[in-house]
Image (cartoon, rainbow over all chains, first blue to last red; front, top):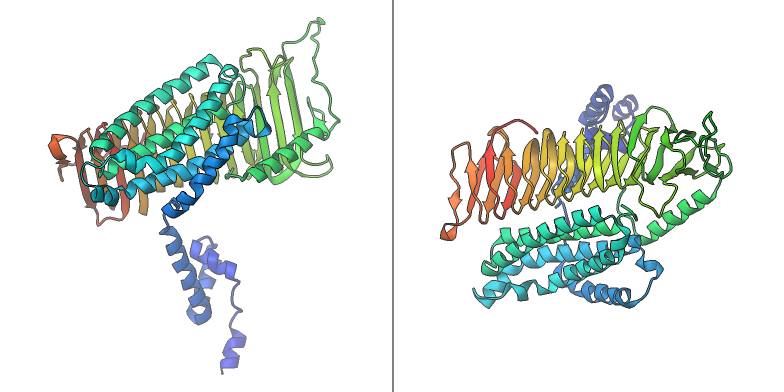
Length: 224
Length: 330
């Protein structure tokens, strides 16, 4: 009897069909056939359930991953070490904007992530140090990486100043002034209220804006 | 379109350099050997001010197209053919060249082109109108100074950058990255993955996205008319308006320093709201609940849920006003 049933049943669909079913992209007829098969086949039904669970877990993942603080402590000296020769050497291939942009991007990723991380961890640190703890001390490790990236990009922008049109330079400087003002306000407020999570996020966002403007400006083609 | 490692960038650069070193198509010749730019003569024998260009080539459906230069207008159109067609009018003395990653007899998977003024060291205003037709699933990269870029019908990937001017994208590319320093950005459609940035230009998005991050320093951000799953809006001094719909379980994060934030949703939207302004105000046009005034009478915060919750909405502002209410899209 079982053999007869197995012989009469259509073969199990390919795994990709089950994925498409979970994604809801199968045509109506194929969708109906696949669901009918699931009702009969425990193995495929279990596989389909696993795919659905995987999708649910994937959707629940955070949008951005921040490196653990320990990882940042390991990376920071390496990144700073990598920057040193770039500051002192003369024109080399790695001074090209594209290469600098890559280097700055690496710094940006880790430094801004670490900025958020350290700022989020600031609660316990500042509480341990008391209500009058200086945020400068708390932010210093993360800011060092961010400021290194900013310095690198600012130097590159200065070097390329003559290549860009006065209008472009003016637009860049206007934006940087706006960001610097916002950064100063948010940093000042955070110094007065170091436990405020909103301020931590706003400072991190302001740094991100500054790095974005600088990086974009250094990537511009000559005469832009 | 996705971030590349330095080694990949280097390899890509070498490949493109090799590509440009191979037989080129220029001024309408199909797969011909490299030829100098043509300086057409008018009937009177005087140099013509403008010339027409036309290049056509069979390509793969997912061809990568890179085009840069000092053009004034670029139109990119996705069409249902596996070929690239570049047509337009450019200054007669400008250098226009294309390089293809393969021989003329095969469908190529990559091309690179550029338009350069006759005197690259001088100050030259962008000029020329170019239209590039690409397969719908193509991946297109374009970079320009001050230009108007208009894209329609591309379902592959787009990476567009300008300094000034405008970028308009209509359609639903799978990946869309747009960057305008001083220019405006308008997106009409539902890009699956979207990243848009400007320094002082306004950004308008009419449509939705599964994953979007949009930021500006001082331009205005207006986003709405569509459904979003993960959306991040960031501004320093520009006003931010969100008037879209959020999927169940979606996340909307808005960070603004000094610009006002307008959150136009409905009470039917199942969402958990968390709004806070350090030194600014929060206005709840729905009436209740009322925002809580911060310590020392400065700043406000407001947290509540609608329709049983679901989506997470977080708005952070330093000194801008956050307005919550119902309304229509941008």
